[in-house]
Image (cartoon, rainbow, N blue to C red; front, side, top):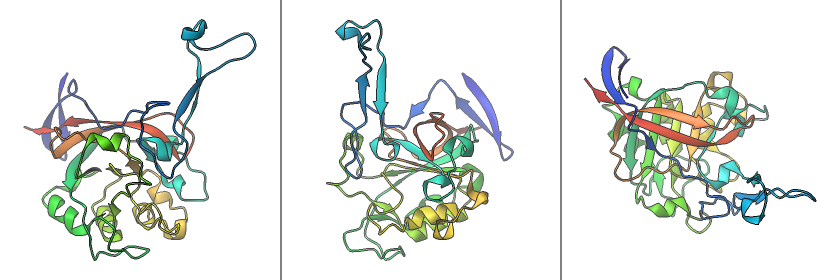
Length: 266
């Protein structure tokens, strides 16, 4: 289905039949990415004395119990409630349906950018300079969402153990720049916008939500971070409409399925 949309008085064509899924499917009991060594996302057929929820074992239907840690088992979207004492849910935070977004590709590297705690020579990061060079000509109205793909970019990301392969992350300078551009929805293919072991600071999370010392900021309630996406190499950098789909969880995070559609200026 083709449609014409107007964004900031500019007309774009969108083919809604050409969706691009940039999530990592959760394969219960199978291969999946993992952070912090948590248990894998798993499923188990429900069973009691009279019933088993597995057709392969003679049950009348498949009827399973699922166990998952959204922050660690795959693509997930989180809200400000991830870092505040207030129990804010992603279901109450994510209100935008179609989000004008920009996809960029970044090569993480060592940097002298600021970060709390201080960067080390082993840290590979996404810098302010990286983003400034890629986005300086992008209008703000196409930056309600920002999608970051990091290189190298292989299928290994779909099953990577990040305790064995420490990922890149965003410097505080980079996140300050993101915030300055008015970006409300940030998507990245790493397991966290912060260093995985950062002494509990979550400094880049705090900059994004403008939550000094993790104090709740109602002005950032509608901002979201989506982590552990996977953007195939055949998807080109550029402008897209983003449909950010989540499970209706009343929790700080939910497994999610970001879908993007190419924006073609008329």
